[in-house]
Amino acid sequence: MAIWQTTRFSLDLTRPLVMGIVNNTPDSFSDGGQHHSPSAALRHAEKLLKDGAHILDIGGESTRPGSPPVPEDEELQRVLPVVQEAVRLGVPISVDTNKAAVMQAVLEAGVDIINDIWALRQPGAQDIATAHPSCGIVLMHMHKTPLDMQQTPMEGDPVPQVLDFLQHRTQVLQNLGINSSRIVWDYGIGFGKSTAQNFALLARQRTLLTLDFPLLAGWSRKSALGQVTGLPVEQRLLPSVAAALLAVERGARIVRVHDVAETVAALAVWQAVQDNN
Image (tube, rainbow, N blue to C red):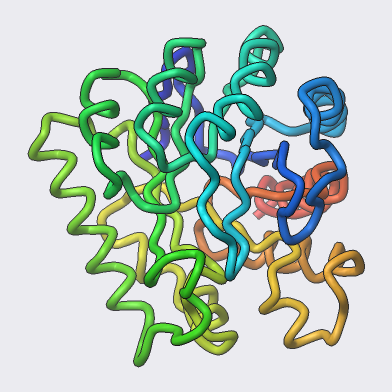
């Protein structure tokens, strides 16, 4: 689908979009604590826009392997003040959450997209998505939970399993009356998958395009990149950009990244090649 319908924006996906990550958390795996206040998070959001981000993704709960859930009221205290200012920036605002109460609050504040690692499986989440008939939705595949997903990763070929899961979750939402134009798929790099399984999903990513739902790829600074390069998280810029380019080359329409300026520059080169094919 060439258009992604969100609350305030119909996003043209004929060219890849860059989603910049704004983590207002003390413990995210890559940048925990760096922007852990509403004012710092907003300054970071403004920087990402200057760097070329098309979408901002704001989160108040770390989902790194082994992370415990954050209480609902605490997540709201982290996210809502940032969202209330960010919606004035004139770009699509996404919130990374799985809690229905947080979804409700941020959508009332004007958020455009709900990015849910649980694919709207938590209590009340589907009801919120149904009650807000134009917000964009990112459905992600996750094996188990953040607390235990890497203790026993999924077994076997991940591609058909991820495809079946995303198809099933999409059908559930369609049966509730949610329009397909609102839905984007994320195959969940690092969420209960081995390094080999993560790269199998990238290598065969086009298999996930069979139903024409746009793909979001979230490779930025992930541990799988560290496994194949030997680099610590703070040195994974180049592998992250390479993975984003490979994902776009294989059909991803949105890449979720920490390093926006570098990703935008790399995609400009890729786009120049496409325009001259």
